[in-house]
Image 1 (cartoon, one colour):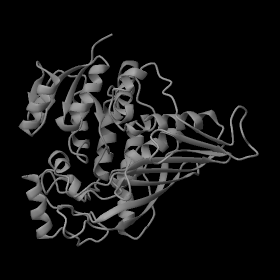
Image 2 (cartoon, helix red, strand yellow):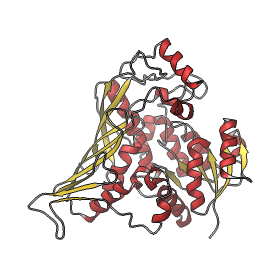
Image 3 (cartoon, helix red, strand yellow):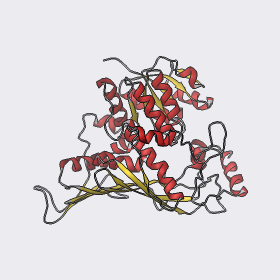
Image 4 (spheres, one colour):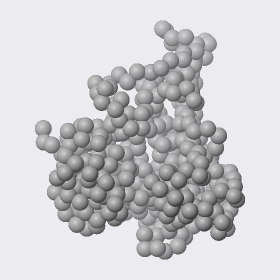
Length: 415
């Protein structure tokens, strides 16, 4: 079997991903990052013999089979298109497109280069409890799926200098402009994977609760969470958050059918609660089943060494299997589901800004949807060229950190 050559664009998160591709027998052949210090640190961590680039134009000319896009959260689409044009497979972190127009351009470019595999590198569906939920749903004992929830709740201390220096290291960083609906794939991806459903309509509301005035911050978004509701193609309803910041940290999911429901228990590790109606208990089960699920996987020992609860290894394996089999990854990791998730994030934010106005989520397989959004470049983030955002990132549009908060943020960065 040919050893696949992988390039890494963005060496922060990308370095962790590279380790999993190595476990799967790939060669990490090139690294690219505009930050030379991060580039050198990644090269030292991954070992000698790896080409290093500080510009994408040179990097994309390197001999590679696939590229991991681990650059800024909302800036993947233009680079994915460059990869397609070079005949290179794409493994893309987080949302696939930062604007609606980018989603259209991404799908069009993909369809023009049918030999390329594209995968949204969403790893949370591969966590052990989410794999178990998918297994139970596919077994049919829950009946028809009516409702599902996904919460990615990631609060953090404003005084965490270590986090700032690694993840939020200058005032114009995308995290300081991140609307609460946008970082949606960790909450939405697992329930799409488990149920097979695709969202078709979205509405959202936010909760404004900015960082206290005596705490350092450069965040332009003062919302603490957004609650996003979606109607799906099978008639079911999803309720998810983007990246929320309330209460205690947790990743929580629940799937409810006509006969029963399954959820992971907050604060209880991987523990599952599977419950059935008392009059519809499957043979061999109890009405209430509380247990630790197993991996049921040939690579269990390797999975346990991987990040994000084993999800990083399994996500990389799905991508490599698709390349070697000459197919696209399964729902919801394919390009069409990826652009649905990104559209839900983008249009959910617009719904929130408009007091919950519902938006239909496009299917970019259809030319009518492409025509509607091909010139829609509204964005809550500063442009790569330094241009200002064209959309508020917060439910209170004129919210901004105070000068004192910004000074405190810079002091923490320099501490």
